[in-house]
Image 1 (cartoon, helix red, strand yellow):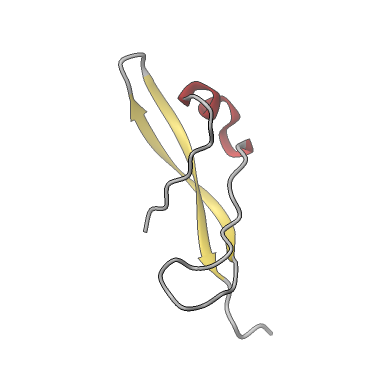
Image 2: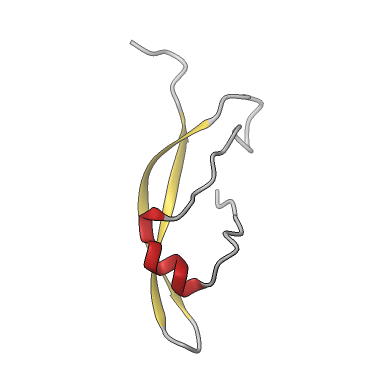
Length: 70
C-alpha cells in the first residue's frame, strides 16, 4: 500500500536527490497490529509529469522483518 510523505521540497529537488532523499523511518506497520518498525529494503522508479516537464522519481520500499531470524 502507498503511504504518502511530505518531504517539504519541490519535485526538482526531490528528483535531484534521488535515493539520497531523507526517506522516513516507519515505526510500525499501518496494516497489522505489529508494533515492529518496517525495514527499508530497496527502491523502485516512477515518473511524474507536470507542466514544467517529466521527472523520474525514486520511491523507497518497506517491508516487515521476519519474526524468525536464523
